[in-house]
Image (tube, rainbow over all chains, first blue to last red; front, side):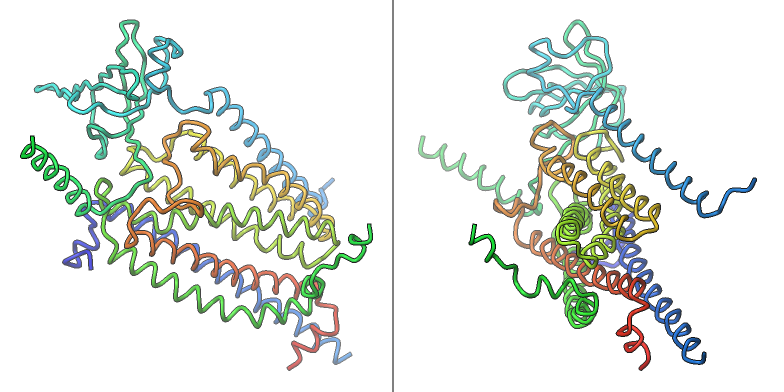
Length: 58
Length: 154
Length: 252
């Protein structure tokens, strides 16, 4: 372990703001990309299913 | 008459694309007009390739032992070198953390007719080599030891 | 010219052209890529943030490298990937290839944007500025604009096969920018330092700094593989919603 205390880890010798901002952007990118893809998958399935249901009734 | 929403959407997109392409071309021209090279190395300045009294950038290494700080102001002078030619730079302001002797920098400012480069901005340029501090300490120590060992055999 | 007539591409190449086959193939491969990405990225993050030593000059701001370099590599690789997929679509008239290219666009654009943002955030403490118009930074910004151009073109053309062809051409032409980005630091003098991470030469840092970077890069490739497969499968569902196999899949 490079850091000896939790405060040191957060502060990063004064570079904490820059480091954590970069990692936060990375996390945001990963999470939104997953969310967008899965949301679209769910929506498409629902759409196609409801249309299939309608055509089955006719 | 109201525009068909689909066509309106298309028109907006085409306009967006046009501005996008325009922006790209503009940026390219901007980059070219400024010369794609970011800075003049000291050799170019020594050979008279850099214009006087015009805002330009000069880049190179800070010569070891050349940094002179004024005792009562933020004025700093140092020698910028590419190990072939030297340029004296004077700068008043706060230097970046990575500014060190033997380190690369890029300074923006004007070259005076007397050959002194008066900078209003100094940026630190670092190389692609990364090292933990212990390693550099060890290297420096090894060098010191080597010098001492050399002294013994002399 | 008989060798040319007898020249065959492998079977999987033609199989991939079938949307149904790709949909199943993606479903089978996705968990592996998801698992690998999760392991490699979390391993790389913990190592890079907690265990890797700080740089002797930059201190802890050096840790930004573990997100900046993977983002830049992926942003550039995915543009080439998009151009190759588009070219395959153009040459063999494969619909799925256009769908793959379309699915990669936003992913590549977001990684390029991340590279620019993290680069700016890293530039402030090390160089002393967020931005400078040097060749590396400007050509990377142009890459982001090329991505947005491809996305806008995709949106503007409702016919998917026309859009696929048009964006493929734009992506192929735009690929010229990739070697410009790569060699900008060698061809011109820039504030940006030369590459740390190359396939041909030995890394310019010790293993305890280099291995977490390698883990992050491979992990991000796996993440993109997972994501592009998911997005392509969405695209297949969308465009093939009339086919009987989609109905069969969604009934149970």
